[in-house]
Length: 98
Image (cartoon, rainbow, N blue to C red; front, side):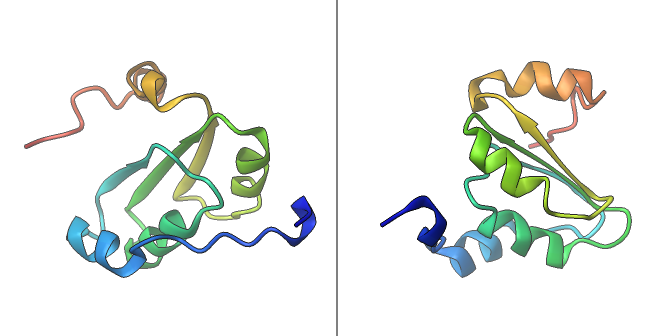
């Protein structure tokens, strides 16, 4: 299969997204964007105040993410292990509450 014919089918998409219990105006982080299946579903559930930041180390995945024309979405090139520094640059320190 060539790269042009590659299709990614997200695993457990409905279960994953339902499990997030998304707050429509919340901020979310997708640490492994891939081809964006989960991110696109999250965006469908966000309102105009919601925000989604995605990270991927694969430049092809980042290029795919840049095709998403949505002011609520941003993709960053990097490893998920660098999410702290990425979030600091976005002024999102302390954003995650448990």
